[in-house]
Amino acid sequence: ARAQRPGYRCTECGWRTAKWVGRCGECQAWGTVEEEGGASAARVVRPAAVSAPAVPIGQVKAEIAQARATGVGELDRVLGGGLVPGAVVLLAGEPGIGKSTLLLDVAARLAERETVLYVTGEESAAQVRMRADRIGAVRDRLYLAAETDLGAVLGHVEQVAPSMLVVDSVQTIGSAEVTGIPGGPAQVREVAANLVRVAKERDMSTVLVGHVTKDGTIAGPRVLEHLVDVVLNFEGDRHSRLRMVRAVKNRFGPTDEVGCFDLHERGIEGIADPSGLFLSRRSEPVPGTCVTVTVEGTRPLPAEVQALVGPTEAPQPRRTSSGLDPYRVAMVLAVLERRLGARLGGCDVFTATVGGIRLVDPAVDLALMLAVASAAGDKPLPAGLVALGEVGLAGELRPVRDVRRRLAEAARLGFTRALVPAGALESTAPPLPAPDRKDRQLVPTRGGKV
Ligand code: TYD
Ligand code: MG
Image 1 (tube, protein in one colour):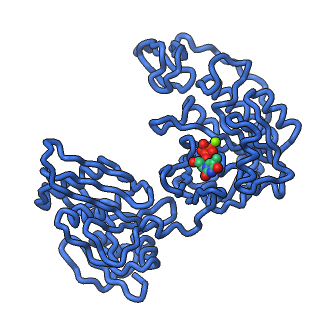
Image 2 (tube, rainbow, N blue to C red):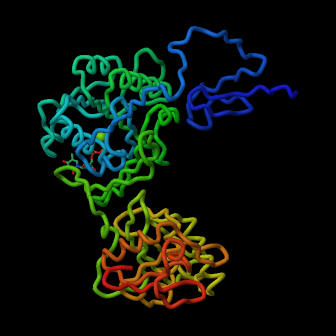
Image 3 (cartoon, rainbow, N blue to C red):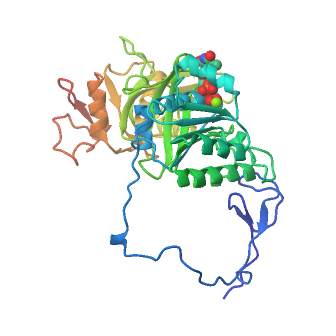
Protein backbone atom coordinates (compact mmCIF):
# COMPACT_ATOMS: atom_id res chain seq x y z
CA ALA A 1 0.00 0.00 0.00
CA ARG A 2 1.15 3.49 -0.87
CA ALA A 3 1.66 5.82 2.04
CA GLN A 4 -0.73 8.75 1.85
CA ARG A 5 1.06 12.02 1.22
CA PRO A 6 0.23 14.87 3.51
CA GLY A 7 -2.26 17.28 1.96
CA TYR A 8 -3.87 20.56 2.87
CA ARG A 9 -7.50 21.53 2.76
CA CYS A 10 -9.46 24.74 3.11
CA THR A 11 -11.76 24.54 6.12
CA GLU A 12 -14.15 26.95 4.40
CA CYS A 13 -14.77 25.46 1.00
CA GLY A 14 -12.96 22.13 1.01
CA TRP A 15 -10.41 23.12 -1.65
CA ARG A 16 -7.42 20.76 -1.62
CA THR A 17 -3.77 21.55 -2.28
CA ALA A 18 -0.51 19.61 -1.98
CA LYS A 19 1.41 22.59 -0.55
CA TRP A 20 0.39 24.83 2.31
CA VAL A 21 -0.69 28.32 1.24
CA GLY A 22 -1.78 31.33 3.28
CA ARG A 23 -4.76 32.06 1.09
CA CYS A 24 -7.29 29.60 -0.31
CA GLY A 25 -7.08 29.32 -4.09
CA GLU A 26 -10.82 28.73 -4.34
CA CYS A 27 -12.68 30.98 -1.90
CA GLN A 28 -9.77 33.43 -1.40
CA ALA A 29 -10.10 33.24 2.40
CA TRP A 30 -6.92 33.93 4.40
CA GLY A 31 -5.52 31.43 6.91
CA THR A 32 -8.14 28.74 6.37
CA VAL A 33 -5.90 26.12 4.74
CA GLU A 34 -4.99 23.39 7.23
CA GLU A 35 -3.17 20.09 7.07
CA GLU A 36 -5.48 17.21 6.38
CA GLY A 37 -5.31 14.26 8.70
CA GLY A 38 -3.64 11.46 6.74
CA ALA A 39 -4.50 7.78 7.22
CA SER A 40 -2.41 7.59 10.37
CA ALA A 41 -4.13 10.58 11.93
CA ALA A 42 -7.67 9.15 11.58
CA ARG A 43 -9.20 8.73 14.99
CA VAL A 44 -11.07 5.59 15.98
CA VAL A 45 -14.76 6.39 16.44
CA ARG A 46 -16.69 4.09 18.77
CA PRO A 47 -20.35 3.20 18.17
CA ALA A 48 -22.66 5.48 20.14
CA ALA A 49 -26.33 5.53 21.08
CA VAL A 50 -28.60 6.07 18.06
CA SER A 51 -31.25 8.78 18.04
CA ALA A 52 -33.83 6.53 16.37
CA PRO A 53 -33.48 2.94 15.16
CA ALA A 54 -33.28 2.34 11.43
CA VAL A 55 -36.57 1.02 10.02
CA PRO A 56 -37.49 -0.66 6.73
CA ILE A 57 -37.99 2.06 4.15
CA GLY A 58 -41.64 1.09 3.65
CA GLN A 59 -42.38 2.03 7.26
CA VAL A 60 -40.89 5.51 6.99
CA LYS A 61 -43.55 8.20 6.97
CA ALA A 62 -43.23 10.20 3.79
CA GLU A 63 -43.93 13.73 4.92
CA ILE A 64 -44.11 15.38 1.58
CA ALA A 65 -42.59 18.81 1.64
CA GLN A 66 -45.61 20.81 0.58
CA ALA A 67 -44.71 23.88 -1.40
CA ARG A 68 -46.93 26.90 -0.75
CA ALA A 69 -47.49 29.29 -3.60
CA THR A 70 -46.08 32.75 -2.92
CA GLY A 71 -48.63 34.43 -5.15
CA VAL A 72 -45.90 35.53 -7.54
CA GLY A 73 -46.49 33.06 -10.36
CA GLU A 74 -43.15 33.55 -12.07
CA LEU A 75 -41.29 32.92 -8.80
CA ASP A 76 -43.41 29.86 -7.99
CA ARG A 77 -42.56 28.48 -11.43
CA VAL A 78 -38.85 28.70 -10.63
CA LEU A 79 -39.27 27.34 -7.10
CA GLY A 80 -41.26 24.34 -8.37
CA GLY A 81 -44.61 25.37 -6.89
CA GLY A 82 -43.70 27.78 -4.12
CA LEU A 83 -41.84 28.05 -0.84
CA VAL A 84 -41.44 24.87 1.18
CA PRO A 85 -41.79 25.32 4.99
CA GLY A 86 -38.38 24.95 6.60
CA ALA A 87 -36.57 25.36 3.31
CA VAL A 88 -33.85 27.95 2.82
CA VAL A 89 -33.57 29.78 -0.49
CA LEU A 90 -30.56 31.83 -1.54
CA LEU A 91 -31.39 34.62 -3.98
CA ALA A 92 -28.16 35.77 -5.58
CA GLY A 93 -27.62 38.74 -7.82
CA GLU A 94 -25.66 41.89 -8.51
CA PRO A 95 -26.41 45.07 -6.56
CA GLY A 96 -29.29 47.10 -7.97
CA ILE A 97 -30.76 44.23 -9.97
CA GLY A 98 -33.99 44.18 -7.93
CA LYS A 99 -33.57 41.54 -5.21
CA SER A 100 -34.94 43.70 -2.41
CA THR A 101 -37.86 44.83 -4.56
CA LEU A 102 -38.85 41.28 -5.48
CA LEU A 103 -38.56 39.96 -1.94
CA LEU A 104 -40.48 42.84 -0.43
CA ASP A 105 -43.25 42.16 -2.95
CA VAL A 106 -43.28 38.44 -2.14
CA ALA A 107 -43.18 39.18 1.61
CA ALA A 108 -46.17 41.53 1.27
CA ARG A 109 -48.20 38.95 -0.64
CA LEU A 110 -47.51 36.25 1.95
CA ALA A 111 -48.27 38.71 4.73
CA GLU A 112 -51.90 38.82 3.55
CA ARG A 113 -52.32 35.35 5.11
CA GLU A 114 -49.28 34.81 7.34
CA THR A 115 -46.74 36.61 9.48
CA VAL A 116 -43.58 37.58 7.66
CA LEU A 117 -40.36 39.04 9.08
CA TYR A 118 -38.10 41.08 6.81
CA VAL A 119 -34.64 41.72 8.25
CA THR A 120 -32.62 44.41 6.54
CA GLY A 121 -28.92 44.63 7.23
CA GLU A 122 -28.24 46.70 4.20
CA GLU A 123 -30.70 49.55 4.26
CA SER A 124 -32.34 51.41 7.12
CA ALA A 125 -35.90 50.52 8.14
CA ALA A 126 -36.99 53.92 6.76
CA GLN A 127 -35.52 53.13 3.34
CA VAL A 128 -37.36 49.80 3.21
CA ARG A 129 -40.56 51.55 4.31
CA MET A 130 -40.13 54.03 1.45
CA ARG A 131 -39.76 51.19 -1.03
CA ALA A 132 -42.82 49.50 0.49
CA ASP A 133 -44.81 52.73 -0.04
CA ARG A 134 -43.56 52.99 -3.62
CA ILE A 135 -44.46 49.40 -4.59
CA GLY A 136 -47.53 49.07 -2.36
CA ALA A 137 -46.15 46.50 0.08
CA VAL A 138 -47.32 47.87 3.43
CA ARG A 139 -49.18 45.13 5.35
CA ASP A 140 -50.13 44.67 9.00
CA ARG A 141 -48.48 41.28 9.28
CA LEU A 142 -45.26 42.26 7.53
CA TYR A 143 -42.69 42.97 10.24
CA LEU A 144 -39.51 44.88 9.56
CA ALA A 145 -36.26 44.90 11.56
CA ALA A 146 -33.00 46.66 10.72
CA GLU A 147 -30.36 44.43 12.25
CA THR A 148 -26.82 43.29 11.54
CA ASP A 149 -26.18 40.98 14.48
CA LEU A 150 -27.06 37.32 14.10
CA GLY A 151 -28.08 36.90 17.72
CA ALA A 152 -30.47 39.85 17.43
CA VAL A 153 -31.93 38.44 14.20
CA LEU A 154 -32.64 35.16 15.99
CA GLY A 155 -34.19 37.20 18.81
CA HIS A 156 -36.56 38.87 16.34
CA VAL A 157 -37.47 35.44 14.96
CA GLU A 158 -38.40 34.29 18.50
CA GLN A 159 -40.51 37.40 19.12
CA VAL A 160 -42.31 37.62 15.79
CA ALA A 161 -42.53 33.85 15.14
CA PRO A 162 -42.94 34.36 11.38
CA SER A 163 -43.77 31.64 8.89
CA MET A 164 -41.44 33.34 6.45
CA LEU A 165 -38.14 35.13 7.06
CA VAL A 166 -36.24 37.33 4.62
CA VAL A 167 -32.63 38.24 5.39
CA ASP A 168 -31.34 41.04 3.15
CA SER A 169 -28.44 40.28 2.88
CA VAL A 170 -26.60 37.34 4.38
CA GLN A 171 -23.31 39.21 3.89
CA THR A 172 -24.37 42.10 6.13
CA ILE A 173 -25.22 39.93 9.13
CA GLY A 174 -22.40 39.00 11.48
CA SER A 175 -21.95 36.96 14.63
CA ALA A 176 -19.97 38.23 17.62
CA GLU A 177 -19.06 34.61 18.41
CA VAL A 178 -17.02 34.22 15.26
CA THR A 179 -13.88 36.03 14.19
CA GLY A 180 -13.60 37.59 10.77
CA ILE A 181 -15.27 40.50 9.08
CA PRO A 182 -19.01 40.39 8.24
CA GLY A 183 -19.36 39.07 4.72
CA GLY A 184 -16.14 37.06 5.09
CA PRO A 185 -16.23 33.30 4.61
CA ALA A 186 -16.24 32.33 8.29
CA GLN A 187 -19.01 34.81 9.14
CA VAL A 188 -21.22 34.01 6.17
CA ARG A 189 -20.95 30.30 6.90
CA GLU A 190 -21.83 30.78 10.56
CA VAL A 191 -24.79 33.05 9.77
CA ALA A 192 -26.16 30.76 7.06
CA ALA A 193 -25.69 27.58 9.12
CA ASN A 194 -27.59 29.11 12.06
CA LEU A 195 -30.41 30.42 9.89
CA VAL A 196 -30.72 27.02 8.20
CA ARG A 197 -30.91 25.34 11.60
CA VAL A 198 -33.58 27.74 12.89
CA ALA A 199 -35.56 27.47 9.65
CA LYS A 200 -35.69 23.67 10.00
CA GLU A 201 -36.52 23.80 13.72
CA ARG A 202 -39.40 26.24 13.20
CA ASP A 203 -40.58 25.03 9.80
CA MET A 204 -40.03 28.59 8.65
CA SER A 205 -39.46 29.37 4.97
CA THR A 206 -36.34 31.49 4.73
CA VAL A 207 -34.96 33.55 1.87
CA LEU A 208 -31.40 34.84 2.07
CA VAL A 209 -30.20 37.55 -0.25
CA GLY A 210 -26.66 36.91 -1.46
CA HIS A 211 -24.37 39.34 -3.20
CA VAL A 212 -22.62 38.37 -6.32
CA THR A 213 -19.10 39.53 -7.07
CA LYS A 214 -18.00 40.94 -10.43
CA ASP A 215 -17.11 37.52 -11.84
CA GLY A 216 -20.61 36.24 -11.13
CA THR A 217 -19.87 34.05 -8.10
CA ILE A 218 -21.72 34.38 -4.83
CA ALA A 219 -19.57 36.30 -2.36
CA GLY A 220 -18.57 34.19 0.59
CA PRO A 221 -17.69 30.55 0.84
CA ARG A 222 -18.92 27.91 -1.55
CA VAL A 223 -20.44 26.09 1.42
CA LEU A 224 -23.21 28.69 1.37
CA GLU A 225 -24.57 27.06 -1.77
CA HIS A 226 -24.32 23.62 -0.18
CA LEU A 227 -26.02 24.72 3.03
CA VAL A 228 -29.20 26.02 1.44
CA ASP A 229 -31.94 24.01 -0.29
CA VAL A 230 -32.48 26.27 -3.28
CA VAL A 231 -30.17 28.67 -5.11
CA LEU A 232 -31.79 31.23 -7.40
CA ASN A 233 -29.81 33.51 -9.68
CA PHE A 234 -31.26 36.91 -10.40
CA GLU A 235 -30.12 38.10 -13.82
CA GLY A 236 -30.73 40.98 -16.14
CA ASP A 237 -29.25 43.88 -17.98
CA ARG A 238 -29.41 46.95 -15.77
CA HIS A 239 -30.25 49.13 -18.76
CA SER A 240 -33.42 47.19 -19.52
CA ARG A 241 -36.46 46.44 -17.36
CA LEU A 242 -36.37 42.74 -17.99
CA ARG A 243 -35.22 40.51 -15.14
CA MET A 244 -34.87 36.76 -15.04
CA VAL A 245 -34.74 34.45 -12.04
CA ARG A 246 -33.16 31.09 -12.69
CA ALA A 247 -32.95 28.09 -10.34
CA VAL A 248 -29.43 26.68 -10.33
CA LYS A 249 -30.04 24.30 -7.43
CA ASN A 250 -33.38 23.05 -6.16
CA ARG A 251 -33.95 20.20 -3.72
CA PHE A 252 -37.72 20.39 -4.25
CA GLY A 253 -38.18 21.01 -7.93
CA PRO A 254 -36.64 21.40 -11.33
CA THR A 255 -33.53 23.45 -12.02
CA ASP A 256 -33.00 25.61 -15.07
CA GLU A 257 -36.58 26.88 -14.93
CA VAL A 258 -36.71 30.59 -15.60
CA GLY A 259 -39.06 33.26 -14.31
CA CYS A 260 -39.39 36.55 -16.21
CA PHE A 261 -40.10 39.87 -14.55
CA ASP A 262 -40.59 43.47 -15.49
CA LEU A 263 -38.88 45.79 -12.99
CA HIS A 264 -40.35 49.26 -13.00
CA GLU A 265 -40.92 52.30 -10.79
CA ARG A 266 -43.96 50.84 -9.04
CA GLY A 267 -42.39 47.45 -8.33
CA ILE A 268 -41.73 44.18 -10.03
CA GLU A 269 -44.24 42.19 -12.04
CA GLY A 270 -44.10 38.69 -13.40
CA ILE A 271 -44.35 38.35 -17.17
CA ALA A 272 -46.44 35.26 -17.73
CA ASP A 273 -45.97 35.32 -21.51
CA PRO A 274 -42.44 36.54 -22.26
CA SER A 275 -42.48 35.34 -25.86
CA GLY A 276 -41.95 38.25 -28.18
CA LEU A 277 -39.82 40.22 -25.72
CA PHE A 278 -36.62 39.15 -27.42
CA LEU A 279 -37.64 40.09 -30.94
CA SER A 280 -37.46 43.45 -32.65
CA ARG A 281 -40.67 43.97 -34.58
CA ARG A 282 -40.20 45.28 -38.10
CA SER A 283 -42.48 45.23 -41.09
CA GLU A 284 -39.65 44.61 -43.56
CA PRO A 285 -36.83 42.05 -43.15
CA VAL A 286 -33.42 43.64 -42.46
CA PRO A 287 -30.01 42.15 -43.34
CA GLY A 288 -28.11 40.70 -40.38
CA THR A 289 -30.96 39.40 -38.27
CA CYS A 290 -32.27 35.89 -37.74
CA VAL A 291 -34.73 34.50 -35.21
CA THR A 292 -34.20 31.26 -33.31
CA VAL A 293 -36.16 29.57 -30.52
CA THR A 294 -34.26 28.91 -27.31
CA VAL A 295 -35.57 26.67 -24.54
CA GLU A 296 -35.28 28.08 -21.01
CA GLY A 297 -36.27 25.39 -18.56
CA THR A 298 -39.52 24.09 -20.01
CA ARG A 299 -40.34 27.30 -21.85
CA PRO A 300 -39.58 27.85 -25.53
CA LEU A 301 -38.68 31.48 -26.25
CA PRO A 302 -38.26 32.96 -29.71
CA ALA A 303 -35.19 35.20 -29.72
CA GLU A 304 -33.53 37.31 -32.36
CA VAL A 305 -29.81 37.24 -33.15
CA GLN A 306 -28.33 40.31 -34.82
CA ALA A 307 -25.04 40.72 -36.63
CA LEU A 308 -23.17 43.59 -38.20
CA VAL A 309 -20.20 42.97 -40.48
CA GLY A 310 -18.11 45.90 -41.67
CA PRO A 311 -14.73 46.28 -43.35
CA THR A 312 -11.87 47.56 -41.21
CA GLU A 313 -8.27 48.64 -41.73
CA ALA A 314 -7.33 47.58 -38.22
CA PRO A 315 -4.76 44.76 -38.01
CA GLN A 316 -6.96 43.05 -35.39
CA PRO A 317 -10.59 43.13 -36.58
CA ARG A 318 -13.09 43.38 -33.78
CA ARG A 319 -15.18 40.44 -32.61
CA THR A 320 -17.70 41.80 -30.14
CA SER A 321 -20.71 39.92 -28.87
CA SER A 322 -23.35 40.71 -26.30
CA GLY A 323 -25.76 38.11 -24.96
CA LEU A 324 -23.94 35.32 -26.80
CA ASP A 325 -21.13 33.02 -25.75
CA PRO A 326 -17.95 34.51 -27.35
CA TYR A 327 -16.56 31.01 -27.82
CA ARG A 328 -19.61 29.88 -29.82
CA VAL A 329 -19.47 33.07 -31.88
CA ALA A 330 -15.78 32.48 -32.70
CA MET A 331 -16.54 28.87 -33.59
CA VAL A 332 -19.45 29.76 -35.87
CA LEU A 333 -17.35 32.45 -37.60
CA ALA A 334 -14.54 29.93 -38.14
CA VAL A 335 -16.98 27.40 -39.64
CA LEU A 336 -18.40 30.10 -41.92
CA GLU A 337 -14.91 30.94 -43.17
CA ARG A 338 -13.46 27.45 -43.44
CA ARG A 339 -16.47 25.43 -44.57
CA LEU A 340 -18.56 27.95 -46.45
CA GLY A 341 -15.86 30.23 -47.84
CA ALA A 342 -17.01 33.43 -46.17
CA ARG A 343 -14.31 36.13 -46.01
CA LEU A 344 -14.48 37.85 -42.65
CA GLY A 345 -10.73 38.38 -42.08
CA GLY A 346 -10.75 42.09 -42.91
CA CYS A 347 -14.05 42.78 -41.19
CA ASP A 348 -15.28 43.76 -37.76
CA VAL A 349 -18.06 41.41 -36.64
CA PHE A 350 -20.53 42.51 -33.99
CA THR A 351 -23.18 40.09 -32.73
CA ALA A 352 -25.94 40.68 -30.21
CA THR A 353 -29.28 39.49 -28.86
CA VAL A 354 -32.42 41.59 -28.43
CA GLY A 355 -33.95 42.51 -25.07
CA GLY A 356 -30.91 41.59 -22.99
CA ILE A 357 -31.43 37.82 -23.12
CA ARG A 358 -28.39 35.57 -22.74
CA LEU A 359 -28.49 32.77 -25.28
CA VAL A 360 -26.58 29.67 -24.23
CA ASP A 361 -28.65 27.03 -26.02
CA PRO A 362 -26.56 25.36 -28.79
CA ALA A 363 -29.66 25.50 -31.02
CA VAL A 364 -28.81 29.19 -31.50
CA ASP A 365 -25.78 28.39 -33.71
CA LEU A 366 -27.66 28.21 -36.99
CA ALA A 367 -29.45 31.53 -36.48
CA LEU A 368 -26.14 33.13 -35.49
CA MET A 369 -24.50 31.78 -38.61
CA LEU A 370 -27.35 32.95 -40.85
CA ALA A 371 -27.37 36.39 -39.22
CA VAL A 372 -23.63 36.82 -39.88
CA ALA A 373 -23.93 35.49 -43.44
CA SER A 374 -26.90 37.78 -44.06
CA ALA A 375 -24.97 40.78 -42.68
CA ALA A 376 -21.85 39.93 -44.70
CA GLY A 377 -23.86 39.61 -47.92
CA ASP A 378 -26.14 42.53 -47.04
CA LYS A 379 -29.15 40.40 -47.95
CA PRO A 380 -32.10 39.92 -45.60
CA LEU A 381 -33.37 36.46 -44.76
CA PRO A 382 -36.91 35.59 -45.82
CA ALA A 383 -39.64 37.09 -43.66
CA GLY A 384 -41.24 34.90 -40.98
CA LEU A 385 -38.25 32.55 -40.69
CA VAL A 386 -36.88 30.82 -37.59
CA ALA A 387 -33.68 28.73 -37.59
CA LEU A 388 -32.75 25.93 -35.19
CA GLY A 389 -29.63 23.81 -35.08
CA GLU A 390 -26.27 23.27 -33.48
CA VAL A 391 -23.34 23.79 -35.83
CA GLY A 392 -20.45 21.33 -35.62
CA LEU A 393 -16.79 21.98 -36.42
CA ALA A 394 -17.07 20.01 -39.66
CA GLY A 395 -19.85 22.33 -40.76
CA GLU A 396 -22.58 19.81 -40.05
CA LEU A 397 -25.95 20.72 -38.58
CA ARG A 398 -26.75 18.75 -35.43
CA PRO A 399 -30.19 17.97 -34.07
CA VAL A 400 -31.47 19.84 -31.02
CA ARG A 401 -34.04 18.83 -28.43
CA ASP A 402 -37.69 19.89 -28.28
CA VAL A 403 -37.93 20.86 -31.95
CA ARG A 404 -41.70 20.46 -32.08
CA ARG A 405 -42.33 22.60 -29.02
CA ARG A 406 -40.01 25.28 -30.34
CA LEU A 407 -41.77 25.32 -33.69
CA ALA A 408 -45.19 25.41 -32.07
CA GLU A 409 -44.18 28.51 -30.07
CA ALA A 410 -42.73 30.16 -33.18
CA ALA A 411 -45.96 29.42 -35.05
CA ARG A 412 -47.97 30.92 -32.19
CA LEU A 413 -46.04 34.17 -32.67
CA GLY A 414 -46.73 34.17 -36.39
CA PHE A 415 -43.57 32.66 -37.86
CA THR A 416 -44.33 30.67 -40.96
CA ARG A 417 -41.03 29.11 -42.03
CA ALA A 418 -38.41 27.09 -40.15
CA LEU A 419 -34.96 25.75 -40.92
CA VAL A 420 -34.26 22.68 -38.81
CA PRO A 421 -31.65 19.89 -38.93
CA ALA A 422 -32.53 17.05 -41.30
CA GLY A 423 -34.69 14.41 -39.66
CA ALA A 424 -35.42 16.60 -36.65
CA LEU A 425 -39.14 15.91 -36.89
CA GLU A 426 -39.05 12.27 -37.93
CA SER A 427 -38.27 10.55 -34.64
CA THR A 428 -41.28 11.90 -32.78
CA ALA A 429 -43.97 11.95 -35.47
CA PRO A 430 -44.45 11.21 -39.15
CA PRO A 431 -42.53 13.69 -41.31
CA LEU A 432 -44.37 16.66 -42.66
CA PRO A 433 -44.53 17.20 -46.40
CA ALA A 434 -41.36 19.19 -47.00
CA PRO A 435 -38.99 19.69 -49.91
CA ASP A 436 -35.98 17.59 -48.92
CA ARG A 437 -32.54 19.03 -49.27
CA LYS A 438 -29.23 17.32 -48.80
CA ASP A 439 -28.39 18.78 -45.44
CA ARG A 440 -31.57 20.26 -44.09
CA GLN A 441 -35.30 20.42 -44.36
CA LEU A 442 -37.46 23.36 -45.09
CA VAL A 443 -40.62 22.99 -43.10
CA PRO A 444 -43.63 24.81 -44.45
CA THR A 445 -46.24 26.19 -42.12
CA ARG A 446 -49.93 26.27 -42.73
CA GLY A 447 -52.58 28.07 -40.76
CA GLY A 448 -50.30 28.79 -37.83
CA LYS A 449 -49.48 25.13 -37.30
CA VAL A 450 -46.05 23.77 -38.06
P1 TYD B 1 -33.24 46.98 -5.43
O1 TYD B 1 -34.46 46.12 -5.32
O2 TYD B 1 -32.83 47.75 -4.22
O3 TYD B 1 -32.02 46.06 -5.94
P2 TYD B 1 -31.07 45.09 -5.07
O4 TYD B 1 -31.76 44.77 -3.79
O5 TYD B 1 -30.87 43.89 -5.97
O6 TYD B 1 -29.78 45.82 -4.87
O7 TYD B 1 -33.41 48.04 -6.63
C1 TYD B 1 -33.91 47.66 -7.87
C2 TYD B 1 -34.05 48.84 -8.79
O8 TYD B 1 -35.08 49.71 -8.39
C3 TYD B 1 -32.80 49.67 -8.92
O9 TYD B 1 -32.11 49.33 -10.10
C4 TYD B 1 -33.32 51.07 -9.04
C5 TYD B 1 -34.82 50.94 -8.98
N1 TYD B 1 -35.46 52.08 -8.25
C6 TYD B 1 -36.54 52.72 -8.83
O10 TYD B 1 -36.97 52.36 -9.95
N2 TYD B 1 -37.14 53.75 -8.16
C7 TYD B 1 -36.69 54.16 -6.94
O11 TYD B 1 -37.26 55.12 -6.37
C8 TYD B 1 -35.57 53.49 -6.36
C9 TYD B 1 -35.04 53.90 -5.01
C10 TYD B 1 -34.99 52.45 -7.04
MG1 MG C 1 -31.11 45.32 -1.89
